Amino acid sequence: MKNIFSGSGVALVTPFKEDFSIDFVALRNLVRYQIDNGTDFLVVQGTTGESPTLSQDEKLQVLKTVIDETNGALKVVYGIGGNNTYDIAEKLKKVPAGVDGILSVSPYYNKPSQEGIIKHFTYLASQTELPIILYNVPGRTGSNMLSSTTLKLAEIPNLVAVKEASGNMEQIMEIIRLKPDGFGVLSGDDALTMPLIAAGADGVISVVANAFPKRFAEMVHSSIEENLPRAREAHYELLPITKMFFEEGNPGGVKVSLNEQKIAGETMRLPLYPVSDSLRNRIQIETRKILK
Image (tube, rainbow, N blue to C red; front, top):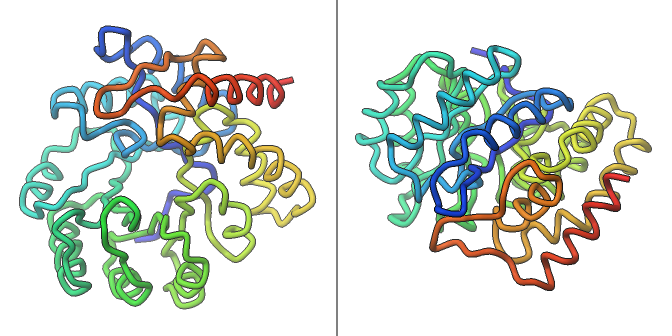
């Protein structure tokens, strides 16, 4: 099974109303914004979507809303991960129609060995026919999925790609160098997307592209087409606000920009909390600058 997820992917935020209920109107607006501005695929209920604070019913409501609004215009990836292998496997069996793939994070908190990570994903792959994107994000999970582990998992047919957010360029390039044909490498760090694609990666699953889908997609597509002058221009234009978006945690920063554009509000569910007034002001100014 070859990877079908490349280019500019977006890890969708979950918009909330001020009473903390899901804002489905804003969610549909956000999806339409992506469809109309060059995004290649959507990821629903990753960490950027505040998945730890949504019930299972809410997650499925969000997923079904995105599937309905895309209506086949974009591929939809659904986040199902955790540190209870058998529980995840049961959820995989209940994925609704309209999902094109799964994003599954390496188990967090209980910090399995590399062999444990291999057994975990091997079992999950046996429980679904959907393509699965592995997700390595040591800053959140507490453990790094080594390149040798990823490469071994890449031999399993429906483990089709890895979202790499280790920030370790040498590790990611080792995966690119040795991966089998058809296995994809996606950047999990917005700021490293352009250089990683230049090194041979296939695309990104982005936070920044929630707010700037057109400009971010231009950067990604120019990188893939090896139009590096154009790619660098967009990369350096977006770099300052990329840093701002993560300065006080994700997705607080990007929600400020979406609110500035009247697409979705800033509300987040605890334990996440809105950004400081000073950062909000800087993001608003930079958003207006980029959108000129």
